[in-house]
Image (cartoon, rainbow, N blue to C red; front, side, top):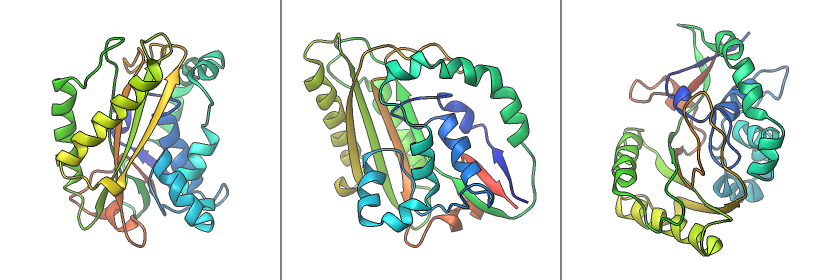
Length: 246
């Protein structure tokens, strides 16, 4: 019977988030691999527009893809809906039981895993640019992703603006475009960069990982592998975020 193992990288994600990657989606992802749930595969990694475009061209693959199923299960229309359902309170209550259930040391064969580099932060309201501190973290993000062997780097940008910010729709699009242009400067191929721009009506509530605020800037990097990414799960050069182990 397979079980799951989460790593410290998993704990650096927001517990739950509407638009970006988060701990909840990773846990759901691993649970979908079990035969008595969805018996899913890691056909394609992603949590936004990129995996959506891919699904249109490969609906059969999407129907058994772990990230696609996780995004469907964890979907909320808006941050306001997410706040109203007290998901953060639920995660705080059950975080330790979930982690103790999943956190095992293992020497068995790894059958699936999640691999990504993620960076989500807030900026002051009406801030027009991308802070240098965030750009430096993006450099480290891409540097880590370049350790993945024999893959292309796929980027998912989620650029948010609060409805109270000046010219909020244009601001969200501008943030997304600036993040994309900087990723291109860092060598990520434009055709593998996907940008989602959102307007949010409320703040992300304080969670037990310290995330809070409007989380306007989010970049996720994932490997794009020919024939699936399972081979990376046992590669010593790769540090997965979580693993399904048999």
